[in-house]
Image (cartoon, rainbow, N blue to C red):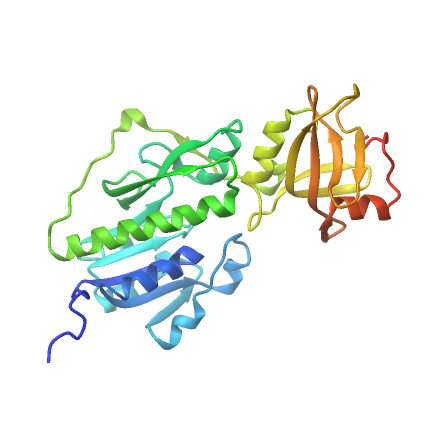
Length: 318
């Protein structure tokens, strides 16, 4: 009888992923290809990941496997005989025996204009480095190789990290651009019409993995730098934080205001119900602490300050 949907190609795809992007990619690929399998990250390893999605509800629709070690899945992948493997958000490095399995390509999605921005925590770093300005950036669909982020690029889609973006909204742009590239490129691969562009190694820049302790803020920094750190490490990441006389405070939302007083960084300038906690930082600026986590509970900074009896003119830090 033939295909009921002529837009679905015979190209056999297999998805390896553990993030919300993997979910979106699966839903996209099922409309344009023949998905022969999905590999997800098991719960033990998933609990260590900030942006984890088990993809468990796809089990009733597709052939699925969960693992903590992608390099132990070679036989399972071979049995499904994929033309293309697409990796979404998997932190482990794929060894050559895995990369060689698909008939055509093992593809990765990397949130940078490769070869710029190879490595880890790219979006976090770009927000931290933005100095409160928009960043013209982009997303690459590339062929995976044993060395990370070095393979030929199949497609690129630009986007802007705006000053109003935090890491969550920036990654939503990553997801949208990834789906645009997949919708363009998968039909081209199926037709044998794709084009590969090799990376220019003279333009390489690289970022490195961040740890929660790298999120510690110094209140002697500029207000713009503090705001950028908060934006860069917002949920679903662990959050930027300060060490105070009341313990560790995680900052989820802050804004910048002028200060009409002289004083050391960390001086509490104002406590305003319904607005927040205004704290002196470097220069003639203050930061409104708005949404915070303190003593394990997320709440409004002004409510916490009022309940704790914190007064204007006190020092937030020792």
